[in-house]
Figure: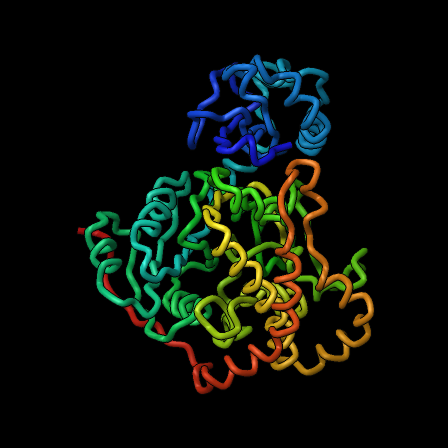
Length: 443
């Protein structure tokens, strides 16, 4: 549990199969009493654990607490890899299947890298050059052999981002300019220019894990008919009340279990697939490029930078699933998101998320009127689900924070359909997509 009194909270990464180590902390360490630890086994995340920093900074100081929190998940992971369960974390420091054995997940990862599909990564940005550079630094440091990065500058006020990309020094990085305002238009610009059979999108305020694209490729190969992959989004910082409140409100965390969503299989969720927020978030998503093009890309009337504020990612997920493709949530595809630091920005984000959610429903109906009948059949339960906050699953970890975000979100949902109509009128005639190419990041 993290409270306001614990801030700031640094983060760390713990690999259970590595020898015992001193924890390497990221973030403000000056007065921290808690540590947020992402725990992995064979590179795959198995849980997020809050450690008591007063106990020390060596793995041994937190071994029992970590094992209590993730032991069950670790053994589930071992079982899926054909390995025997263990009763204590020390047994993981060498192969549990014998000194010369290689865990199955490592074999799968090696095979993925050996036959790595080329991936186009799109980063849409506007007037945030420093943030985009941090994002690029992490992207170009990934352990993945075949990818390009398209930086799409959306209606830029100056050429600062263009100059940053031109001087970046990496031929894998290209600069595109899209003058039509809106995240969907920026993403469609990247989609038109993409060369990879897989296209991945990240926000300019995230830092990707070095195994991010490998995990994305694994998810596309995990089953037939995959049209979209989403991943795990964790907070890059927990330093301010606003950042902690976002996590208490639900954050972007969808858990540590891989899930496959398919309209052909009966879902336990009676509102499926209208509750598209359970699929993932646009800060960390990837698509089969051909499928996304066939579906017409993203609706330019929704998304950040439009009057509808958001919902472009949800509409994309919804259309992939309703078109008969599978969507895979892959927790191994990790990114760290830099949450808003102040309360006013967080309140604006909560309201904007609600507007985008309502706009997503309106967009889905506008693009396929048959969706209205499906929604009407689910309306009594849908109204309750859509207007309800998703904070319950995190309340065990985050406590003693003010409310109010859910109310703002509800107001936004109610305004969303009207916002979509206004935005669609403003963006009329923009359904055709075009890419405005610029410079490469090489010298």
